[in-house]
Length: 636
Image 1 (tube, helix red, strand yellow):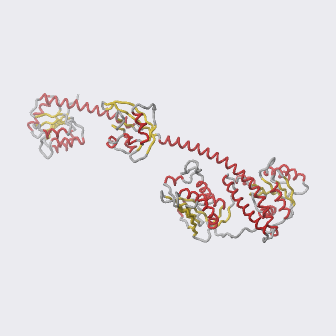
Image 2 (image 1 turned 180 degrees about the vertical axis):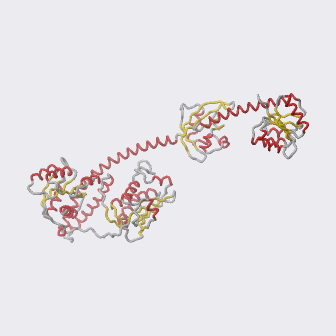
Image 3 (image 1 turned 30 degrees about the horizontal axis):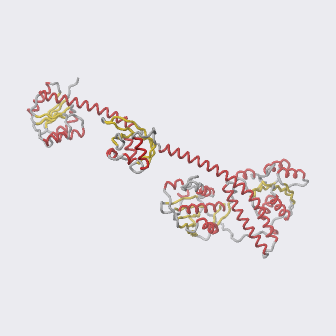
């Protein structure tokens, strides 16, 4: 076995040599004798002793106790004090350094030998204990879950692994001085007490833990009884299941959203069907109103009454268009729109929507702001933004709608994928509501995201606005701060052309195009068929009528005359309009056609009107629109 290497620190040379002689007798290796504490510190790493015999009173600035303190700060080595002094102050100072022995001079040789051996024994035992604790601590800290050691009754913390400190934000001292109850919400204290004191049968209960910064996490607890520092204690593992819980909640939300979307799909189909039936009725109502207005003098009292019927019919047509938009079967019709005029026309309706406690203001930078968009979609954007603003206001408040012409910066245009060649018009909708946090703003345009209570919002309003704005080559941004209201900015490309305003005018039949061609008219609605037949005959056309596709095909085959144009509803019993034209092309490949319908998806229209000789007209349409469309197709 290798000799133990001892360092003697003694300023009395004779005493030091005597100690060295004794040590050599017991087969120890004395590596050096040093008289100054400072010199010990300088040479320590080179000497690297296994044990130090330290006199308390030394030559130089540092005494033995001060030298030991500095050694202990950096090195783990057993130290035995050798001194002629044994008063209380010196003993107390020496205790602070946790010496491995304290010998009063003069001492016997066997006393020195016994003290040294016991020092090495203790040192080895403590080293083994440290290694054991190091392994335990490594294992303790390598577990990814937070582990708490609690008192037997669970009231206080005794220890924890590093995961706890990192996850919860406490230092070890802070944690041990913190009562267990501070980690739990008050509503769970009773349940926690029952669990820790074996009064609950739940194996792995779920609790809410509160971090030092106030953040809450969901944990699943697992406990066991262990012996810690010779005491019975509780070891509690707290597995963070926040993400799992959020995923379960998210799954529940997705299921509810799926149910909601299925319900909306059914309602949408119902709305589309209702809109289709209404459009058939409105085609006849508005069409016959046009006929009557043409035939009557504008000074006639009946003219004014029929004009009211026509106006109401057009309003009803706009309503059915909204129903079709809801059912996603609206035909997009982009036209030049004056934003200022549109906002002014909507103002009364918007005021009814927001109620008397909220004021509505409109400000326009320029007399007119022209964009190219679908008017009904634009109205939907404005209505949805105003309703959203209304819902954000508690009690009295204000909503401001404004329009300005903007020259956007290149970075903004690039970031939002806008057209660099365009000038833009900005619509701003500002409210004095409760505002939004940054987290809400990040999700505000996501489908189904809503901050409203269950059953009070679908989460589709702003996502619909976002889709419409993008469809019309624009951008939408939100600015908001909690407690300070919100501002939605919508950007649309500006166009130079102005819109001609004015009241609705009914075209004189003398100004409409005429013809003498033969038209096959197929519609299962008698009122629409009668109306179209009458106005087309007045314009000189010969009409062959049929109430469905099969009858239309039969009359086409039986006719001795050339059929120049097919006007057909799309959805009919027995044979649809597209099926009919496919049959007719077997006999007359170049036949021209106009499909009419009040409830068809855009993709369906694109598919069946891609042929050069086929066009589409959505119900309800006006007297002059159908006359002009017929002539346009025939002249192609």
